[in-house]
Length: 148
Image 1 (spheres, one colour):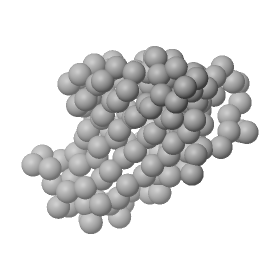
Image 2 (image 1 turned 120 degrees about the vertical axis):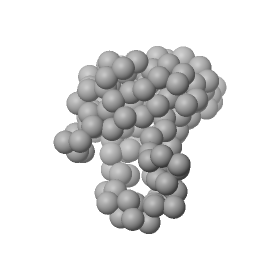
Image 3 (image 1 turned 90 degrees about the vertical axis):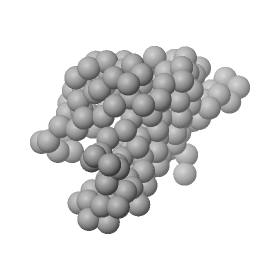
């Protein structure tokens, strides 16, 4: 099993963050890791992700959608031989929210496929910093630090 996590405090409401992370078409405008997303966010909908990390596209399905709180994307091989589960979690904290991005790769074939997955931690940090900048209306995320 491999897991990558990043979280950050964002000055804004859960609804503000939710509006950004569920607008698939706008990801390339703020997420430096994303070239484009085909499809739209909806329960049991499929999304095709075209990232800067690979020439290959990735298909995920939206398996959980709790407005202003939690979204889960899943992908993998049949029979759960290898799977990736990416969770977007929004936790209100007064006038701000704690945003957490977490991805777990698991399954019987994870020792084999897991070795082929690069360290995604830097891309997760870029994602949460860029999300913060987008929600807070900042043009530059360079000064932002994720919560350890």
